[in-house]
Image (cartoon, rainbow, N blue to C red):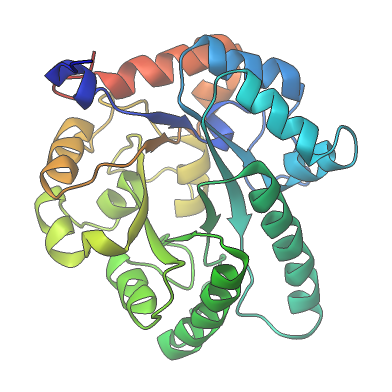
Length: 293
């Protein structure tokens, strides 16, 4: 069966967790989506996404009610082929913090294995005083070794309010691990917000270590804190200052062939009905691909 150029270039898009979660946001006291899982999965499938993302709170709720095997069946029966889970944090901590983090790590590893997740998204916390890079690198190398033993891929994301504030720092941390599970997550919001141009990005980032790519949009002007800005004021692709289309073009030129996470986190998006939000997020993302069907 022949395949047209348009078909080969139509991207696989993942509705990352906040894109389909309705009125839910990172770092709320309860991050659980108010949208029932069955309805959420159906909405993602109905609007034609290739993948779905789920956050820890939603995963634990599913485990304790229907169980992960049933959740996996629901996702696959809906025709959704890609699953990602998040957000693994505090893997560098000690004492009581580490004990709590290890519990979340065990939850996410279990979910990833049963659901056949493509990767686990990994963060570097929130802090005003970043730890030495050597400390973070050593802890991440240990985490990656553990993930490799479990057959799990990690995708480490630098964020400008964390222990890894720049993409360059995340590249160095991943580069200090020889584990095949040690990968990078590159999100346009964080690269653009820290002043890394789309042209320079792929001179800094080794494509062979990239595990995940995320597209969205945003504004150069920060409203509130940088964290408040990232959870309240992201824009749909092509509707902000970050030039999502050029980001996509440069990433394709650099050789990315995997799926694209679409991560829309904003007050505007949370206010929309889930189906409407998913459709707008998908349409605006597809418009940034030169030959998307």
